[in-house]
Length: 396
Ligand SMILES: Cc1ncc(COP(=O)(O)O)c(C=O)c1O
Image 1 (cartoon, rainbow, N blue to C red):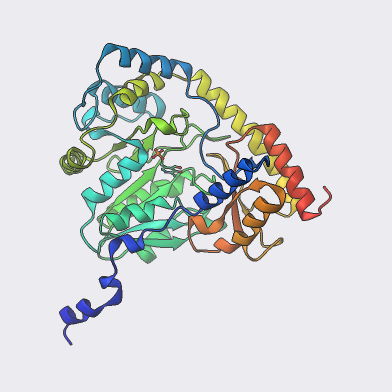
Image 2: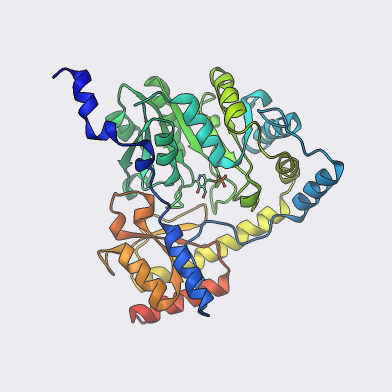
C-alpha cells in the first residue's frame, strides 16, 4: 500500500474536523451552578475568568457619544486608524517599543485575533507548540484552521511555560510557531524575562514565530510583564480589552504582526469578520486613556490573591509556583483527591463552591489540579474558603 492509499484509510484523517473540537467543560459546571441558584442556593463562583467589575465609566461614556454621533458603520478591516495610532503610542509608553500603526490589526476580541493568525499562518497539517496546561480555546482555533496543536507538558520547573529546551525538543518540520501565555491562564505565572527572550530567538532560528498572548498584561502583582516585542520585533503579539479594562462583552482586541503577515491577515479579516465592532473601537480609544480605574481593579485582585495564597494551603491545596498575574491560582489537589473533576463537581453540589477542574486546560497532570479564579469579591472568597473548609473537615 503506498502512502496515498494509506492516508485514505487512516482513521484520524477520516474524522471530521468538528469532531476534534472539544467543548469548554467548565460551562457544564456553570450550567449546574445556575440550576442550583434557580433552586435558591447561593453559589460562590470561583470558576469563571471574567472580571466582576464594571467597564470604566469613561469608556462607557465614549461609546455612548459614538452611538449618538451616528457612526455605526464598518471601519477599515484592519481597524479604525485612530485606534491603531493610539495603540502604537501605547506600545511606546508602556514598553518603549516602536510599532508602526499598520502592524496593529483590530480584531473582535483576542479570540478574533487567534482565528485570524492561525488562518493566515497554517496550512493543513502544520503545527503550533502550546503549553499544557494552557488556555483551552487555542488548540481548537488551530484545529479549525486545519493545523495541529502540539500540546507540550509544562510544570513548576519552567513556571508552567514553554522553555527553549522544550521548544527545541518538540519543534517539527511543519511547526510554524510556539505560544506563550504570559501571565498564564490557568496558572497565573509569569515567564522569566530571560526565558521569553531566549524563546523568541529560538523560534526565529527555527524559522518560525513566537506568539505571545498578553491579554493579562496590566494585571500583575509585583513585577511587570514584559512584551515579547521588547525582545523580538518580529514576534506576533495578541492582546485585548476584556481583562485589564473589564470589557469582555465588547468583543475587542488586537494583534501585532510582522510586515510580511499584514496582507494575509488583512485578507482573512476582510472575509471572516469584515471589521471589529465600530462602537467598541471608539470605546477602546477611551480605554487606552484610562488608568485610575484599571489600577483600582488591579489592587482589588491583588488583595484577593493574597487571601487565597494564605488560606488555600491550610486546606490542602498546594500552590507550587506563586502566581504573579491574571486572576487565577492553579492548585495541586493531590493531597485531597486523585480525581479533580469529581472533586470539583462534589464541591459544587455539597459546598456550593464552583471551581474549575484541571482537565479544562489540558491533559498533563490535570486530574491533580484545579483552577481558582479570584474574579469574585473578597466577601464571597471568604465564604467560599469557609465552605471548602467545612466540606473538607479541616481546621485552620
Ligand atoms: C489566555 C486567554 N487568551 C485569550 C482569551 C480570550 O479573550 P477575549 O476573546 O475576550 O479577548 C482568554 C479569555 O479568557 C484568555 O484567558
